[in-house]
Length: 118
Image (cartoon, rainbow, N blue to C red; front, side, top):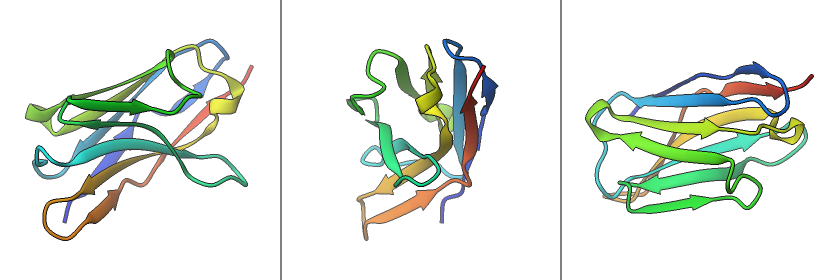
């Protein structure tokens, strides 16, 4: 079992920045895919960005050029730097660990609210 804890959400004005952090309770495997998802009211949860041991990074088209995902394997942490935030980025952001080693398993954090508003 892996527990994920997010932090760093909050209220920010359009054009502002936030940095989300996610800490895993146990060491991750090189094959694990760490990702950030978000869910806005009335919408489905969507992938924002994912990283696999720094080798493969993916972003949704809506955040390319504005968000950056990174990881610190020594600290079992993954980050999401969000710049030039827009009101449409408002959502609950969830950290995800997708484990493909052994039975495929998804672990989720409790979520952190990001609100972009003037």
